Length: 154
Picture 1 (cartoon, rainbow, N blue to C red):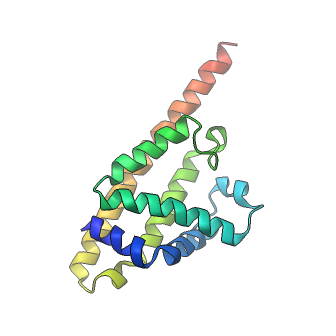
Picture 2 (picture 1 turned 90 degrees about the horizontal axis):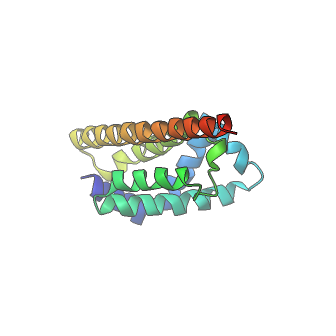
């Protein structure tokens, strides 16, 4: 069901989802958002739209968690220019994932009238983002420990 929901969001509501995600980010204020302060609202929405498109495409293929793990590994390797590895905190991932989840949940009623299906999808989103948050938290801790060991060996 999450694959169908992802396809629905991607094909019919991608722009609105990105706008809702950006609204949630402005409300939650992850510390990393200071890196985006110089850009316009439109630029942030477009960047968010591109990221959500890739994420939802993976979800359509049943590769939601693999996508998240790949993004975390890319972040650890310094391959995500928007998220400088040394500037990201656990709080950033927690709040970014919370914003995405809130944005997606806001479209559940447009996707299905069934209360049971909405609740099932909400649970799936909660479980997915809990696992993604856990993986990201472990990555931040690994990076911090590695950096501390590097500083001690100097």
